[in-house]
Length: 317
Image (tube, rainbow, N blue to C red; front, side, top):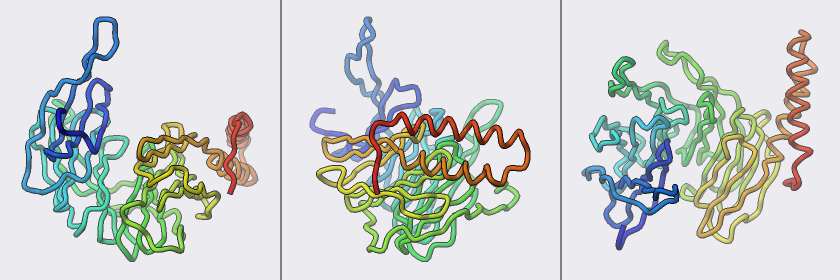
């Protein structure tokens, strides 16, 4: 990595290697994490560079959770899928005019892209069940309904829900746990206005909690926490960093909000998410008609209340 640095970084699923999109060379480099006999890390060793393409600058990069493929998204809006040995598996023509966002779903089955067009396109990546070899990429479904381009979107941790943010100032929350092979469309759950200001494509990011009840949005240096249940803004964290927020994340439990920018990382306890869950469980309890369901909801409510009460710091609106 002499005389160059990575501007996009991902760990391999087994955490034994790093993927880096190199700034000067505009390539994705696979680097192995070497260990000493005592178990301590001894540095990085370049394993391979993915082949260069004619698609222009690499603007997005991700890796399948099983390590079956690497995704690269390019300035010309095309997406390439690669094996970990550097072989090109497939090229996806997104037709989004300008590529604003591209991701691999947490389950590893889907690749999704959004851009200047008012929809999110989702493809399924198929592998042979017997051999595990790559088979095909097929269009799965689209998230439709916005009236302007989509700067970003996010999957829930279990890949059953997605949220999209649009320049039309609305967000749309979808249930994507549908039989798309039978032509079922993603089901719209919530559609609401998330901002009254003009949307900055370059600074806007979104994260979705595992239960899809909490939506976290970063834009123009601030972080907003919204309810996926009623669409309302529950809290705003003003300028959590001294500069732009370059990365917004929720941890695997959705209990922490992580903001990264410059040389700073700030972590917030997602108490608002717990409060949204508590309100939802209380509402469900009032309509529960079976004892078994009531007991299960009551236990979930008590567990969530215990977690919330144990939090030392609370976000305030």
